[in-house]
Image (cartoon, rainbow, N blue to C red):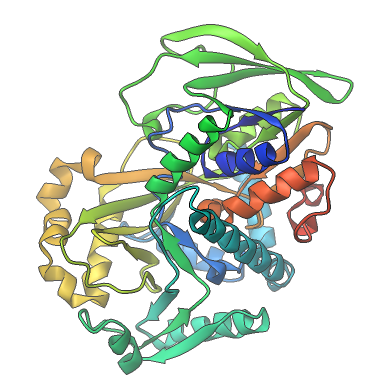
Length: 453
């Protein structure tokens, strides 16, 4: 049995891993060269703490207020776009307590399963990547955010998660070198972190050594269907580019790629669409409706000789995440919703950097951080120091995982928003189980595409 996976990000690679284990002959079509992309620049979180769907009460009203602040963590790029309007209306309707109640438990189960599967990869010795299961601390500075976080803690406890509420003094004891300037925090002990760059490289190498074909720099240009099934995909091979993958244009079937090579056809028993933010136009080629928007996120990585931060953390008021690895620190944030583009909004990057010393004053003196946060240095080295990627946003904050409604041999695995890495292993496992006709490791009904109507 042959399977073709469209997309070589962490979701696509994870799906290939489990399909190959089930005996499938797997080919991956990847639009980039697997040296960059959303799976490389993320925060490296495996986060059961993020069980609440992105679409929840208060998100819209808070987002509207943030839109008028240049350095805010949320922004919708105005555009006359049918996709944006369609997605926006559905997202607003999904921002309810009922959506959170329906989605929280399956999200938690998916995240916990994925964390355990990813840990098993590292423990098996197949791959060696930095993996730290120390949990994650959500810090708050104000009573407003404390109240919201305590409600999240209550929901997490109901789902069986291990969470400890920390006082100001306990937070400072957890980070004795940095002494966070906070009101308190919540320590989500089920969380872990890994270094995604290592995982991506090693997983791709492992798959190729096991016989999985990865066709890099390929663009799907058309989908051929017969009797409700995909009979073939046509793809075009592009010349390698010196630009990072994040600067490449999205799929456009009507326009040839500059420097494109010959057109090829591939046939398979199964096709899996795991192209992240580029999934929607490919689904449309197959006659499938897949409402999504890309949400741009930024991150910056600072090399440091000594790592004073002991736990990954989220600065709640600023919506900034910080990941400490052995010799580097990654800072990330923002949700910029709009069409794929290669523009960097400097005020938003500066807003991320300014938030860190407000919570951790000691970082204002750290040499690597000072260099990055200096406005002139940041402007001078913007392309080299600031990374960005596009998260695929579903209309209700839950991923799309399952068979396509109108195409019998097409499966969808996308819409994971900022949780692609966190959910990748479990998504791949579930796709392989469904494709092979096996019982799934967990109930997948909440993620099915039937909910789209």
